[in-house]
Image 1 (cartoon, rainbow over the protein chains, first blue to last red):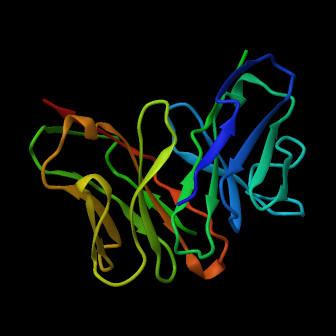
Image 2: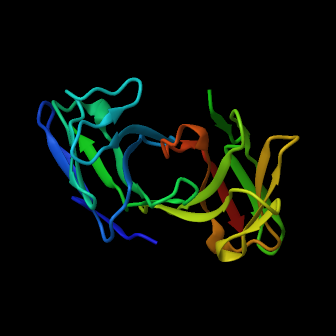
Length: 115
Length: 115
């Protein structure tokens, strides 16, 4: 199994600012993902972080708002840009091993509050 | 389109009684099915998965789930509930045909086990 860490674990930010969340996996993985969990709701996939190329975004999410980097097989960042209170959520990083029938492992999440 | 439904927002059981958390899915082809648990202020923890083979799968902490293809269901069960099982449970599905690795989550079911 993979162990995933995220930084920061939580933050309180002002409207209009940006926050970059870091995700580190303790082993090489084929796929990394970013999810959003709004208060009291389920997880929604934001994008698949592709190593060395642009992320693949889901419907309703755009690169200008959520730029993602993945410079290598174990590290990814998600930036939440020009934040508004509606961006207050938990953001979770996850990773998938070599085969698609493996389970995804999740980081502990970053709890973001935008004032 | 793929989808997962958890028809109950909350399930209440007494400690020592059996528990069931329901999940139904809609996906073309043969699905990969997963259950995750989320404790307060924690990330998601993997419980169990169904990929192929025996319809009854066993997972962590004494949980098991039964895959029923005709009813497109994957209900989570435990013979004897513990107060410490109280948490938020998510069912998730992956369609392996696209090889995207993406998970689609149900809306979650809060399990409350009372002493």
